[in-house]
Length: 152
Image (cartoon, rainbow, N blue to C red):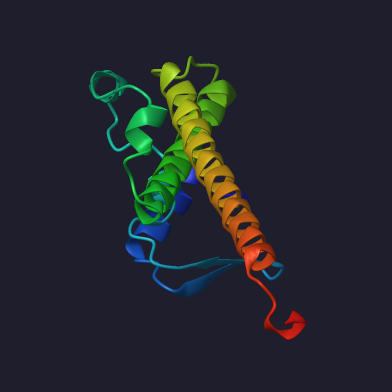
């Protein structure tokens, strides 16, 4: 059977997928956890591209992300990942229909923000590695400076 994407989306949106498994045919299964809107999350929230275009902001800067905790960065990464996947779906659908993607700069901003998160995480990993090496070096120097009581 060939199904229209809108029909599939409508059918899936009636089911609030939450920690369940949806089986398509007999060969494929998609497991989902804590999904609020199903596949609709991969499409814009409104039908009016001009309304979506007005809400576009700027990408996150590294200096802003440095103030965030690792947990916040983790949450932001997945928000951006969902947004990127939604925008890629919109881009694919626009290309399939021969349209121009609405607000194409959004995808670049999301990818830039994700890259900045990677930069900040890399900085933290390097700083942690440096601190561990410095601590190890200080411990070795302290051990070499302590006199041995057995040599008296």
